[in-house]
Amino acid sequence: MRSCVHNKMWGSRAFLAGWLLLLLVQLLCLEAVPISIDKTKVKEPEKKPEEPPASVDTGLHYDRYLREVIDFLEKDQHFREKLHNTDMEDIKQGKLAKELDFVSHHVRTKLDELKRQEVNRLRTLIKAKQDLEGGNDIAVDHQALLKQFEYLNHMNPHTFEVEDLDRLIRSATKDLENYDKERHEEFKRYEMMKEHDRREHLKTLDDDERKKEEEHYEEMKKKHADHPKVNHPGSQNQLKEVWEEADGLDPEDFDPKTFFNLHDTNGDGFFDEQELEALFTKELEKIYDPTNEEDDMVEMEEERLRMREHVMNEVDSNKDRLVSLDEFLVATKKKEFLEPDSWETLEQNQAYTDDEMREFEEHLAQQEQDLNQKAFDLQKQRDELERQQEQLNAQKMELQQAVEHMERLKSQKVDPPPEVLGNAVPEIPAVDSQLHEAQQQGHDSAPQGHHPVPEGHDPAPQGHDSAPQAPQDIPQEHHGQENQNQAQQGLPQTHDNIPPGHQEVVQSQNQLP
Image 1: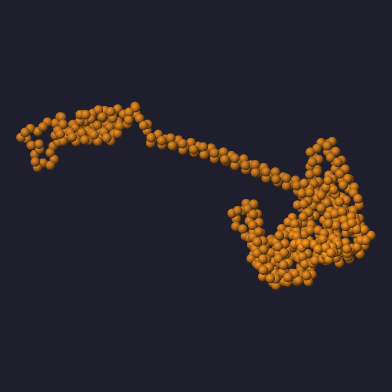
Image 2 (image 1 turned 90 degrees about the vertical axis):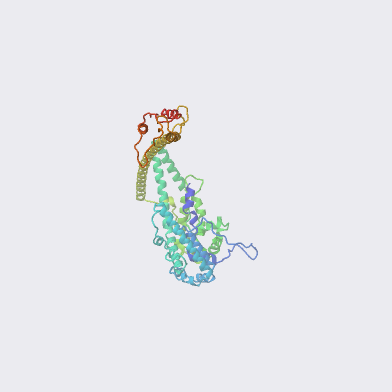
């Protein structure tokens, strides 16, 4: 677990932590041949330069953008020549950036494309952060938010100009200078968290178990501190040990210039940070063994970086985060190189103070309290949502039951039973039609109850438009009106005025419920 943490935190970033624009291009410009290879006798197959592993980066969030810009600028011959003749201070002051106006059109076009891609990447990150914070409906002012990224000119998102190169150089220089400081703080938090977890574990034990655990802890500390003497990093003794054990050479024949050429693995004339750290492997193996319980590999990487930082401070006179051959040779003549002080390892220098540990634990306690409060609030919200859901389900059930009841009522009203008393339902309109025809025939054929007009008597005097109604017709009309009123009131109707042969039909109709 610790090994995974250290790989994520620092392991892959050591080599490129000191990258600046000048330094990276010089790695490609200068070609020194290691003295251990005689190219007149040994002909090696031509190899393409290997790209750095994907996991190795500067630790900067714009590392990929920085790499790609450097790669394309390095391809321009004019820019390479100017870079070779420009010192570090002029680069920091922005003089090299002005040479961008003289690079080829192809390179400038590619740089424009790289900048547009980087701006789009930043906008995507801003939008993703906005979504996580719950601001989906809030308009995002990308121009305002892009101001925080100082390594490019956000006011011109389309083309790569002199100002963009100047900003990139200045930002990378400043950020890389702060890298060591941030790394120390990160390691300090790691150590304090480890101690906090140990103390919390002790609280869960009874007195006897706690005593055994404390004794085991002290035993491991003592065992870790019991190791061979560690040489002062960068001293003559330390380099001679590498010369003898790693290079297999006689320590009496130690030569600083030859040593430099042997360990300048990329042959660029400089010791970069990775090459320096590789020199300390033998010293670190005296202290740390990954198979030992008492040895923490995260601490080993911190020790390695402490050694590199120490040598850089003593040898890198121009502070460009590289050690040139001249700087190295000058350092080998100093008293510190020949008669160094003893080197104090991490177990002799605790990464944090008691006050820092107390503040750290108070901060953790406050964080835990805040998290518990948030968890309590979230649980309340969940309970309330569940209660509201139950109410909605109840309302839904009631509504569904009401709809089903309405459907039943509607079905009972529109669809009556298909049979009544085992007989088909008679069609009432057909009976009414038969009654009407019977009445019409009765008027036309003088039915029973009406006396014929005697011979010699006119049925009605001519010239009278409205003769008095015959007494025999009055009862018929009266009975018809009476039957109609009885039908409206649901009472049985009389059948005095129904012609013979139709009374049975009407009687059958009146028997219907």
